[in-house]
Image: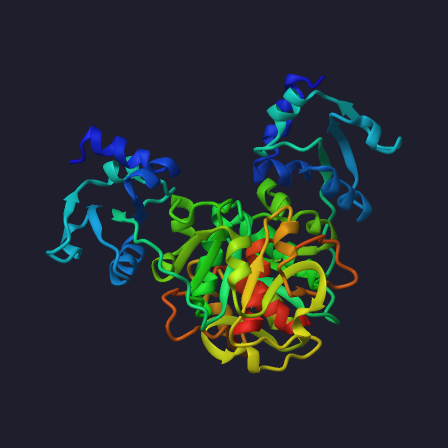
Length: 238
Length: 238
């Protein structure tokens, strides 16, 4: 049985301000919850219709399906919803390619980008302060557990790029053909905001502008940011 | 000034049943509306805060921003909303690669897939009857005008594939490495449902199973369908 106060508290974690304050966030679904535990995140409590599936060391509270529906943000709630402690990010490692996001706004895009980056082996993502919070419930959901494995720093990108020692690539509507480029083992790739692309002050720090060539007959003016990210990462990392 | 009856009619076009009945659908935003006009779709009426931007031949009704907000499905409504007549699909052409979608469910995914396919020059998409309706408002929105340029047929895929004369590729979690394959100029690519992939009865008709290789350290179990589609099309078509 879940209390009114607990419900209220869970609701409050939808707000970024509250998450910053408490350093707590919500994860739904057994697979994703297990991904976070496996990657060193500590579950404070798991609200679950099936306490028997959780190891004895994990604090669970049995709830029924109706209660789960009342606290879940999903249309079709899964069996469990956990509150986790946010794990502080560590310094990004420069020995692998890193992904940089400049003011990404859409939580679904960010979650999908994290999931795709993980698929291709990216360990570090650096986000501008203006990028949507990676612990927002929609990001957690769209990342499908991959957030647990990814080290995400929010930084001032101008500061970060000034010190970054390897080649910096950025995706633009005009640039060198992605498919004709050779990429180094150590590099950074910048993906820009959904509507406005990479900010001019960040563009100045991009050494190599690349583009995904468009078919001459196409009417599309641009690609979705998560789609562009996937196409570029698949070329760089395989 | 928009009437109550008009509002009710626009609202009814959110339902697939009503769209099938009337063969009408809604498009929002000047760029997208112009894309449909350019591609031979006939606008029955354009509700707009700026009638002056539309050519004299086009029937417009001036509305204010508040009225637009009341009929728009967008969080941030643009300046115009048009009702179009659905253009009947023509038979797919086999001289170019075609894309086949097996029971895609998410309207955002379908819209994004149409937009990405257009970017790479795909002219024909064949959808299973179980795939979400391409004239659903969320699909139209996510396709960003590319729907206007794409010939989309809803068909029985078993029937269609039985008669299709060129190689058929499908994306699976296990298959030949996409990046090591050579693709013919005439071919079909099948993308499966978000959760279940390609149905077994369709899988039987796939001649070449391909996969997007995953990094050994990745925790992601799969890629989003629109992401997988983008990566495979970028490899096949560039």
